[in-house]
Length: 119
Image 1 (tube, rainbow, N blue to C red):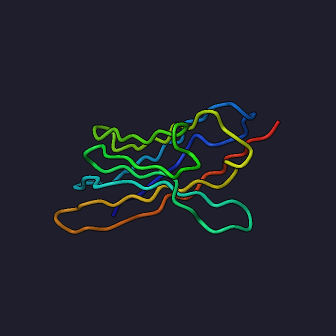
Image 2: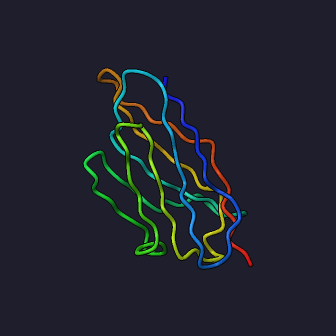
Image 3: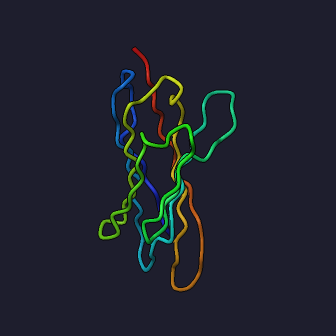
């Protein structure tokens, strides 16, 4: 069983930066890849960033050039660096992690962490 704990959200002014963390704990697993989603109030959950274990990334057009996803495999921690934040980035952000645990592929959601961009 793998547990995910997200941190790093909060309130920031437009143009500011935040770094979200998603820490995975457990034993006997490796991370295959991570997706970051966000869900604004009253809207569907949207994919904003992906990263594979090899470091291949992909971003939604709305965040391209501003957000950067990374993985620290030694710490089993994933990051989403968010720069030049805009009010429309306000949402609850979720990490979604695919792991390989002794040859069994499984996936887990983080608990979600709110990000508010406002002056």
